[in-house]
Image 1: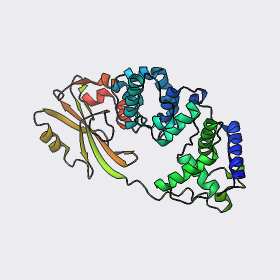
Image 2 (image 1 turned 135 degrees about the vertical axis):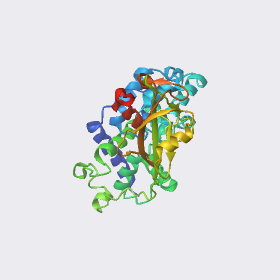
Image 3 (image 1 turned 90 degrees about the vertical axis):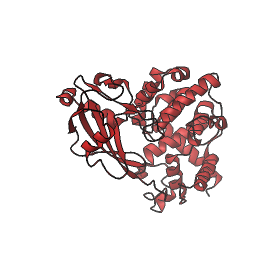
Image 4 (image 1 turned 45 degrees about the vertical axis):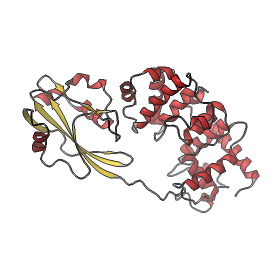
Length: 356
């Protein structure tokens, strides 16, 4: 392990680098725990460039935690549309309600209590506690794993809980007692800008002389992560029912599965194959419908990658006399929150081509 002197040098060099190179982000201009919490939830599994417009949209639409708590869930899900990992939006809404109505609108003021909030894990709690409340607690995420594993030459598997605790303990020795917020934001920015996963700018790095990975030619292999998520293939055939007046039918995904609480067209769903005979499948499921025409809208399946599933998607237009169950006009579809792959397909369609 490095000396106490290096611990001090590391923190000083890191913060000096940060003050010269930091990203100017709106949530860093405030100590408001609501805005900081909102930014941290949005940035989970999301790049800053992608998350920034969502943060601004949420803060504009819901300026306070009570505004968010009082919003209909469908509105929250629609505003989240396109950001992915939709359980975050449900947890965001649930936590807003808890803070607004059970905690009198006041966010928990420390790391331990922040962990009781839905959707707030160790990293998010540490970020909020240190930035909003100046609590001396280090953040540990992918950026921190990468920076510390390279500088210190740590070859432990970061996918294990034991290694995570090792990094948390190391980070706790590095974080300055007088300014934990700046240190945590500095190490996050350093990993995002300087010590990047691929092609890091080692020659301009302030730690080039001390970095074990650079000195031993291990930059490309650190950090080490042995376990990988197994990705399953999934085949979805979405059915766009349409009548002569341009009405269609949508349904909400309520099961605990991908896209929970979002809307979709009726679907044939399989982990093995697409529907082989769409005509027979439709007539078997919707035996009371008078089907006029079936058209495949996608020549080839659209692929859509999730963290744990690779979706193969086809869209079918089925012209009928009247839509099954509840009707929705084509023009009203923009009032509902859809998975981004469905939303994008809807916006690419011309209603006239569906009913002609």
